[in-house]
Length: 197
Ligand SMILES: [Zn+2]
Image (cartoon, rainbow, N blue to C red; front, side):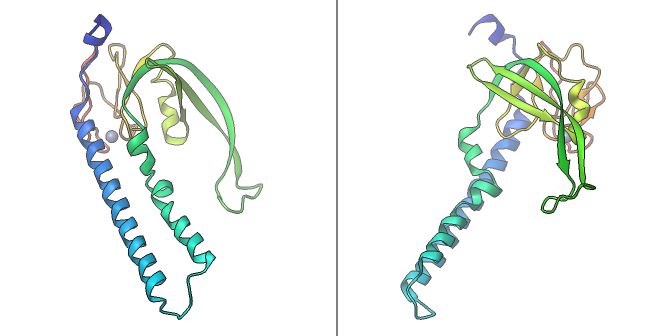
């Protein structure tokens, strides 16, 4: 273990536990979903309650339903995402156009908003970006270029490793800024590690 490694603040065990529980729940839901889907598929392909062989369309429906855990509970992240550390190398202000109405955007519902895009260079190589917008835009002042950060798998916001200059404590689960030295988030109750480098 080199010097910078040994100086890192400890990982937040409450967050690690929370992520583990969340992932276990996702896996369980996915397993239940696939068991139900398998049961229904087997029933219809063996029993033919309507007297007809399953059509190509019903196979397509099964294929689409099999993708549900990937779209709705992002099950792939349980296996693909992991914890890492890195440094914010770029903070960029940008404008995006969004609509209040998702399906039928009208000129009235379209509006331009400011977003902040953080680019983080991971110690292990590669880059990640985090877009701050809406409620989380307030964090654009909290994160600065050059900050060392830690990403916890399944958690949206980065934990800053050096908090010595901060006058607020960030809850990385919900993105709420708390008063300094707070042990638990006032909004969601998750613990906040205030140990600094
Ligand atoms: Zn919180």
